[in-house]
Image 1 (cartoon, rainbow, N blue to C red):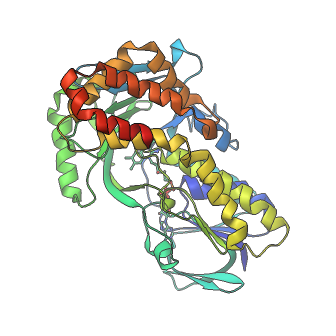
Image 2: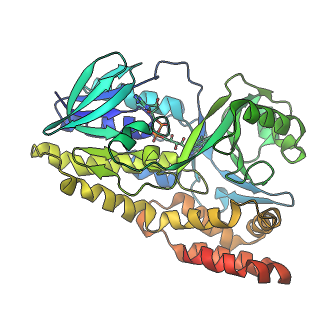
Image 3: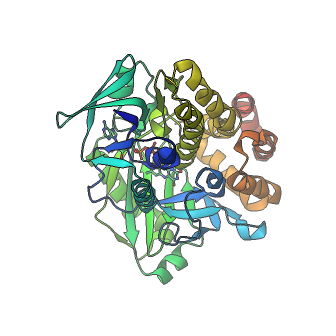
Amino acid sequence: MYDVAIIGAGVAGSSFALKIVNHAKTVLIEEQDFDKNIPIRTNIFAEHNRPYLKEVDWNDKNIFPIPHLRSNYMADTANGVIDSTKFGIPLGNICYTDRLIEFLITQFKDKGGETKFGVKVKRVNRKGDHIELTCDNGEVISTKFLAIATGSHDFNLQKSLGFGVPDQYMGICVHLHGEEAQLNENLKWQYVFHLNPKISTNGPFFINKGVERAFVGFLGKMHDSPSDLKDKLERILQNYKRIQPCIKNLKKGSDVTIGKISKHPIKEFSGDRMLILGEAAGLVTSFFYEGILCGLVSAQVGADTIIPLLEKESSFSKHELRVYDSEIHRILLKNYFRNGNACEYLFYTDASYVRSLWNHYCELIATDITSQRYIYEAYINQDLANHDINKDRYVGEKLFAKLPALSKITLSPRFLRAMMI
Ligand SMILES: Cc1cc2nc3c(=O)[nH]c(=O)nc-3n(C[C@H](O)[C@H](O)[C@H](O)COP(=O)(O)OP(=O)(O)OC[C@H]3O[C@@H](n4cnc5c(N)ncnc54)[C@H](O)[C@@H]3O)c2cc1C
């Protein structure tokens, strides 16, 4: 019988495992495909993630190869650049996420944690004073407590236990490779966030710059087939004029990744003897798709919830675990998620106004230093629970003020609604 079992070794599961390993006698992570040859994901890792990942050295260049100094909110008509060097510390780091996960797992094992890789958990059954996991190799594992951290790979488990399922979108991404000098000439920013409803009405076309590589991709619709997504990405990389200067002389890698990403939190994240962490719970911000932040926050809050219960050999009742839900609400959903929800409501639609609104938004960022500062502060603010939504409102009001008279009339109900989200 394990004290704690965790299904899924993504950011959420592996960081949770490391945070609790010293507080339980036996901790197990089960991961279906950790041994597969995964590409090194190149993600942005905002400064506001820092309090939730104290176990890792922020200066470890193997994991965080470069600082994230500049973001470009890119429109047809403007580069809306947030340049951290104008304001203070960097926006965060660029992160090779798979190396981060590898580091967390190694530390977990060094501290006595157990792993079973290449094993898929097929079924979970509650058994009064414990939980049983049935694996695809026939093994049955018993645990006193379970953390489900399965991302958007397997909703059957949580569904069978009565939990909700978040909505999902298909994403595609690939690395482009080249000389560092060429990348630096192409990309003065470590992150490019570009909206064009012809590419997607669910998310941006993004470029994250690493070292001698850039990670590019976009989100499609839930039912887009892999071949449709691949064809579309190919067409964008070959022909889409706006991004050509960013990708000049770079060579596409063979690591095309296609997978689901979920968002919009489910209603409940805890039940008797179990918690749901990270993307499995729909904990991903709905405009920027910050799933790493949410995975880390849920791991920290989950650890803070169960460590005292492990110490008093509790039965992990739903009532005792409720604090996990309320803390996730307090830190992430109450204030911080509202900005993303409002932006999602304004920009992720197939309405004809989106392209021109995005142009106005990026022009505002390019010219208004206060908007730049407020967006900068959202990247670096480590007190997410007290995220200042008045600053988001300021940017929203400035954007509305820039619109032509006719757009003001047609879009005022949308803006009013967005302000109230
Ligand atoms: C294209 C793209 C770009 C992104 N960029 C960023 C970014 O720059 N910054 C950011 O913050 N976020 C980004 N995100 C989101 C972020 O990467 C994810 O939300 C986050 O990594 C999810 O972490 P997780 O641990 O919850 O889930 P996952 O990383 O998905 O991990 C879940 C794990 O569980 C395993 N698993 C699932 N079911 C089972 C089972 N039944 N048995 C055993 N194992 C199982 C899976 O194999 C998987 O390894 C991006 C997402 C996409 C799609």
